Amino acid sequence: MKDLLTIEEREDFEIDLLLQAIYRVSGFDFRRYMRTSIKRRIENRMRLERVLKISGLIEKVMYEKGYAEKMLEDFSINVTEMFRDPEFFKAFRTKVIPFLRELPEIRIWHAGCSTGEEAFSMAILLEEEGLYDRAKIYATDMSEKVLQQAEKGVLPLTRMQVYTKNYLQAGGDQAFSEYYSTDYQHAYLNPDLLRNIDFFQHNLVTDSSINEFHVIMCRNVMIYFTADLQEDVNQLFYDSLSKGGFLGLGSKETIRTMFFCDKYEDFDSLEKIYRKV
Figure: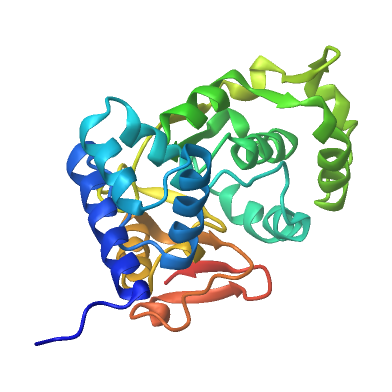
Protein backbone atom coordinates (compact mmCIF):
# COMPACT_ATOMS: atom_id res chain seq x y z
CA MET A 1 0.00 0.00 0.00
CA LYS A 2 1.26 3.43 -0.91
CA ASP A 3 2.22 5.68 1.99
CA LEU A 4 -0.15 8.55 2.83
CA LEU A 5 0.49 11.86 1.09
CA THR A 6 2.91 14.22 2.76
CA ILE A 7 1.60 17.56 4.01
CA GLU A 8 3.20 19.29 1.00
CA GLU A 9 1.67 16.81 -1.47
CA ARG A 10 -1.74 17.12 0.13
CA GLU A 11 -1.57 20.93 0.03
CA ASP A 12 -0.50 20.91 -3.63
CA PHE A 13 -3.38 18.57 -4.46
CA GLU A 14 -5.84 20.86 -2.68
CA ILE A 15 -4.52 23.86 -4.65
CA ASP A 16 -5.11 21.87 -7.85
CA LEU A 17 -8.70 21.23 -6.77
CA LEU A 18 -9.26 24.88 -5.79
CA LEU A 19 -7.99 26.17 -9.13
CA GLN A 20 -10.10 23.59 -10.95
CA ALA A 21 -13.16 24.71 -8.97
CA ILE A 22 -12.50 28.37 -9.80
CA TYR A 23 -12.14 27.47 -13.48
CA ARG A 24 -15.37 25.44 -13.54
CA VAL A 25 -17.35 28.15 -11.73
CA SER A 26 -15.92 31.29 -13.36
CA GLY A 27 -14.16 30.22 -16.57
CA PHE A 28 -10.90 31.86 -15.43
CA ASP A 29 -7.94 29.50 -15.55
CA PHE A 30 -5.10 29.98 -13.05
CA ARG A 31 -3.81 26.41 -13.27
CA ARG A 32 -0.72 27.49 -15.23
CA TYR A 33 0.20 30.47 -13.07
CA MET A 34 3.39 30.23 -11.01
CA ARG A 35 2.47 28.19 -7.97
CA THR A 36 4.52 30.25 -5.50
CA SER A 37 2.55 33.42 -6.32
CA ILE A 38 -0.80 31.64 -6.26
CA LYS A 39 0.01 29.96 -2.96
CA ARG A 40 0.80 33.28 -1.26
CA ARG A 41 -2.55 34.69 -2.32
CA ILE A 42 -4.41 31.58 -1.17
CA GLU A 43 -2.71 31.73 2.22
CA ASN A 44 -3.65 35.40 2.56
CA ARG A 45 -7.30 34.62 1.75
CA MET A 46 -7.25 31.80 4.32
CA ARG A 47 -6.03 34.21 6.99
CA LEU A 48 -8.70 36.76 6.12
CA GLU A 49 -11.44 34.12 6.22
CA ARG A 50 -9.94 32.29 9.24
CA VAL A 51 -10.08 29.08 7.23
CA LEU A 52 -7.65 26.36 8.34
CA LYS A 53 -7.62 24.23 5.19
CA ILE A 54 -7.72 24.97 1.47
CA SER A 55 -10.67 22.61 1.23
CA GLY A 56 -12.64 25.26 3.12
CA LEU A 57 -12.04 27.70 0.27
CA ILE A 58 -13.07 25.06 -2.28
CA GLU A 59 -16.41 24.71 -0.52
CA LYS A 60 -16.94 28.48 -0.58
CA VAL A 61 -16.08 28.71 -4.29
CA MET A 62 -18.48 25.88 -5.13
CA TYR A 63 -21.45 26.90 -2.98
CA GLU A 64 -21.16 30.55 -1.97
CA LYS A 65 -22.47 32.98 -4.59
CA GLY A 66 -19.86 35.51 -5.72
CA TYR A 67 -16.98 33.86 -3.87
CA ALA A 68 -15.17 32.78 -7.04
CA GLU A 69 -15.07 36.43 -8.11
CA LYS A 70 -13.51 37.31 -4.76
CA MET A 71 -10.76 34.77 -5.43
CA LEU A 72 -10.26 36.25 -8.92
CA GLU A 73 -9.51 39.62 -7.37
CA ASP A 74 -7.00 37.95 -5.04
CA PHE A 75 -5.17 36.45 -8.03
CA SER A 76 -5.29 39.59 -10.17
CA ILE A 77 -1.91 41.40 -10.31
CA ASN A 78 -2.48 45.13 -9.88
CA VAL A 79 1.00 46.56 -9.33
CA THR A 80 1.44 49.50 -11.70
CA GLU A 81 2.31 53.20 -11.94
CA MET A 82 2.58 56.01 -14.46
CA PHE A 83 5.73 55.76 -16.61
CA ARG A 84 6.86 52.72 -14.66
CA ASP A 85 10.52 52.00 -15.47
CA PRO A 86 11.09 55.45 -17.02
CA GLU A 87 14.04 54.33 -19.14
CA PHE A 88 11.73 51.98 -21.01
CA PHE A 89 9.43 54.85 -22.00
CA LYS A 90 12.42 57.02 -22.85
CA ALA A 91 13.71 54.33 -25.21
CA PHE A 92 10.23 53.94 -26.69
CA ARG A 93 10.02 57.69 -27.29
CA THR A 94 13.42 58.00 -28.94
CA LYS A 95 13.62 54.69 -30.84
CA VAL A 96 10.12 53.37 -31.58
CA ILE A 97 8.22 56.62 -32.17
CA PRO A 98 10.17 57.43 -35.39
CA PHE A 99 8.84 54.18 -36.92
CA LEU A 100 5.28 54.88 -35.76
CA ARG A 101 5.39 58.29 -37.46
CA GLU A 102 5.39 56.50 -40.81
CA LEU A 103 2.03 54.80 -40.14
CA PRO A 104 -1.33 56.26 -41.19
CA GLU A 105 -2.90 54.77 -38.05
CA ILE A 106 -1.40 53.25 -34.90
CA ARG A 107 -2.91 50.40 -32.89
CA ILE A 108 -1.42 49.64 -29.47
CA TRP A 109 -2.43 46.86 -27.08
CA HIS A 110 -1.67 47.16 -23.37
CA ALA A 111 -2.29 43.58 -22.17
CA GLY A 112 -2.79 43.20 -18.44
CA CYS A 113 -3.33 46.94 -18.04
CA SER A 114 -4.54 46.81 -14.43
CA THR A 115 -5.87 50.25 -13.39
CA GLY A 116 -4.59 51.85 -16.59
CA GLU A 117 -1.51 53.81 -15.57
CA GLU A 118 0.71 52.53 -18.39
CA ALA A 119 -2.01 53.13 -20.97
CA PHE A 120 -2.39 56.68 -19.64
CA SER A 121 1.38 57.10 -19.91
CA MET A 122 1.31 55.99 -23.52
CA ALA A 123 -1.52 58.44 -24.28
CA ILE A 124 0.55 61.32 -22.87
CA LEU A 125 3.64 60.23 -24.79
CA LEU A 126 1.74 59.99 -28.08
CA GLU A 127 0.04 63.33 -27.43
CA GLU A 128 3.40 65.02 -26.95
CA GLU A 129 4.75 63.41 -30.11
CA GLY A 130 1.76 64.58 -32.14
CA LEU A 131 0.56 61.04 -32.89
CA TYR A 132 -2.37 60.56 -30.53
CA ASP A 133 -5.08 61.64 -32.99
CA ARG A 134 -4.26 58.70 -35.27
CA ALA A 135 -3.71 56.19 -32.47
CA LYS A 136 -6.02 53.74 -30.73
CA ILE A 137 -4.99 52.17 -27.44
CA TYR A 138 -6.64 48.88 -26.47
CA ALA A 139 -6.20 48.36 -22.72
CA THR A 140 -7.27 44.95 -21.44
CA ASP A 141 -7.30 43.05 -18.18
CA MET A 142 -9.05 39.97 -16.84
CA SER A 143 -10.47 41.91 -13.87
CA GLU A 144 -13.67 43.87 -14.42
CA LYS A 145 -13.09 45.70 -11.15
CA VAL A 146 -9.77 47.27 -12.16
CA LEU A 147 -11.11 48.11 -15.62
CA GLN A 148 -14.03 50.00 -14.08
CA GLN A 149 -11.52 51.98 -12.06
CA ALA A 150 -9.28 52.58 -15.08
CA GLU A 151 -12.13 53.97 -17.18
CA LYS A 152 -12.60 56.79 -14.67
CA GLY A 153 -9.04 58.09 -15.08
CA VAL A 154 -8.80 58.80 -11.36
CA LEU A 155 -5.47 58.41 -9.57
CA PRO A 156 -4.41 58.75 -5.93
CA LEU A 157 -3.08 62.22 -5.27
CA THR A 158 -0.39 60.77 -3.01
CA ARG A 159 1.23 59.09 -6.05
CA MET A 160 1.51 62.14 -8.29
CA GLN A 161 4.91 63.23 -7.01
CA VAL A 162 6.37 59.83 -7.93
CA TYR A 163 4.56 59.88 -11.28
CA THR A 164 5.93 63.35 -12.04
CA LYS A 165 9.46 62.15 -11.35
CA ASN A 166 8.92 59.11 -13.60
CA TYR A 167 7.52 61.31 -16.36
CA LEU A 168 10.53 63.63 -16.35
CA GLN A 169 12.97 60.69 -16.31
CA ALA A 170 11.05 59.18 -19.25
CA GLY A 171 11.85 62.22 -21.38
CA GLY A 172 8.79 64.36 -20.69
CA ASP A 173 9.49 68.07 -20.87
CA GLN A 174 6.06 69.58 -20.17
CA ALA A 175 4.48 70.51 -16.85
CA PHE A 176 3.07 67.14 -15.82
CA SER A 177 0.45 68.86 -13.66
CA GLU A 178 -1.18 70.15 -16.87
CA TYR A 179 -2.45 66.63 -17.56
CA TYR A 180 -4.71 66.42 -14.51
CA SER A 181 -6.77 68.34 -12.00
CA THR A 182 -6.98 67.60 -8.28
CA ASP A 183 -9.04 67.78 -5.15
CA TYR A 184 -7.88 67.00 -1.64
CA GLN A 185 -7.66 63.24 -2.31
CA HIS A 186 -7.52 62.41 -6.04
CA ALA A 187 -5.99 63.44 -9.34
CA TYR A 188 -8.33 63.42 -12.35
CA LEU A 189 -6.79 62.92 -15.76
CA ASN A 190 -7.95 65.35 -18.41
CA PRO A 191 -10.85 63.64 -20.25
CA ASP A 192 -9.17 64.43 -23.56
CA LEU A 193 -6.40 61.97 -22.68
CA LEU A 194 -8.93 59.13 -22.46
CA ARG A 195 -10.52 59.79 -25.85
CA ASN A 196 -8.57 57.12 -27.74
CA ILE A 197 -8.33 54.43 -25.05
CA ASP A 198 -10.73 51.47 -25.06
CA PHE A 199 -10.80 49.44 -21.86
CA PHE A 200 -12.30 45.95 -22.01
CA GLN A 201 -11.99 42.51 -20.46
CA HIS A 202 -9.62 39.97 -22.00
CA ASN A 203 -8.05 36.87 -20.48
CA LEU A 204 -4.57 36.10 -21.82
CA VAL A 205 -4.88 32.48 -20.71
CA THR A 206 -8.08 31.55 -22.53
CA ASP A 207 -8.99 34.31 -25.04
CA SER A 208 -7.82 34.70 -28.63
CA SER A 209 -6.41 37.64 -30.59
CA ILE A 210 -8.50 40.81 -30.69
CA ASN A 211 -6.87 42.69 -33.60
CA GLU A 212 -3.62 43.25 -35.47
CA PHE A 213 -1.35 45.67 -33.63
CA HIS A 214 1.70 47.80 -34.33
CA VAL A 215 2.71 47.71 -30.64
CA ILE A 216 1.94 45.26 -27.85
CA MET A 217 2.87 46.07 -24.26
CA CYS A 218 2.75 43.31 -21.65
CA ARG A 219 5.15 44.32 -18.92
CA ASN A 220 5.65 42.44 -15.64
CA VAL A 221 2.69 40.12 -16.24
CA MET A 222 4.23 36.92 -17.61
CA ILE A 223 6.61 36.58 -14.66
CA TYR A 224 3.59 35.07 -12.91
CA PHE A 225 3.07 32.44 -15.65
CA THR A 226 4.63 29.01 -16.01
CA ALA A 227 7.05 28.51 -18.91
CA ASP A 228 4.51 26.70 -21.10
CA LEU A 229 1.88 29.38 -20.52
CA GLN A 230 4.44 32.07 -21.37
CA GLU A 231 5.02 30.33 -24.69
CA ASP A 232 1.28 30.23 -25.43
CA VAL A 233 0.83 33.92 -24.59
CA ASN A 234 3.85 34.93 -26.61
CA GLN A 235 2.43 32.98 -29.55
CA LEU A 236 -0.76 35.01 -29.12
CA PHE A 237 1.28 38.22 -29.20
CA TYR A 238 3.28 37.12 -32.23
CA ASP A 239 0.11 36.29 -34.13
CA SER A 240 -1.39 39.65 -33.11
CA LEU A 241 1.56 41.79 -34.23
CA SER A 242 1.82 43.25 -37.71
CA LYS A 243 5.04 42.72 -39.63
CA GLY A 244 7.64 45.04 -38.13
CA GLY A 245 5.50 45.50 -35.00
CA PHE A 246 7.01 46.05 -31.56
CA LEU A 247 6.67 43.95 -28.40
CA GLY A 248 7.51 45.53 -25.03
CA LEU A 249 8.15 43.25 -22.05
CA GLY A 250 9.07 43.82 -18.42
CA SER A 251 12.61 44.08 -17.10
CA LYS A 252 12.61 40.47 -15.83
CA GLU A 253 10.98 38.98 -18.93
CA THR A 254 12.55 37.70 -22.13
CA ILE A 255 11.80 35.79 -25.31
CA ARG A 256 15.37 34.50 -25.74
CA THR A 257 14.62 30.98 -24.49
CA MET A 258 11.32 30.62 -26.31
CA PHE A 259 10.50 28.82 -29.53
CA PHE A 260 10.03 31.98 -31.59
CA CYS A 261 12.91 34.11 -30.27
CA ASP A 262 14.48 34.02 -33.76
CA LYS A 263 11.30 35.62 -35.11
CA TYR A 264 12.11 38.89 -33.33
CA GLU A 265 14.90 41.42 -33.60
CA ASP A 266 16.43 42.61 -30.33
CA PHE A 267 15.43 46.20 -31.02
CA ASP A 268 16.51 47.36 -27.54
CA SER A 269 17.73 44.40 -25.51
CA LEU A 270 18.34 46.47 -22.37
CA GLU A 271 14.78 47.79 -22.21
CA LYS A 272 13.24 44.54 -23.55
CA ILE A 273 11.79 45.98 -26.74
CA TYR A 274 11.59 43.46 -29.59
CA ARG A 275 10.59 43.89 -33.23
CA LYS A 276 8.81 41.25 -35.29
CA VAL A 277 10.88 40.30 -38.33
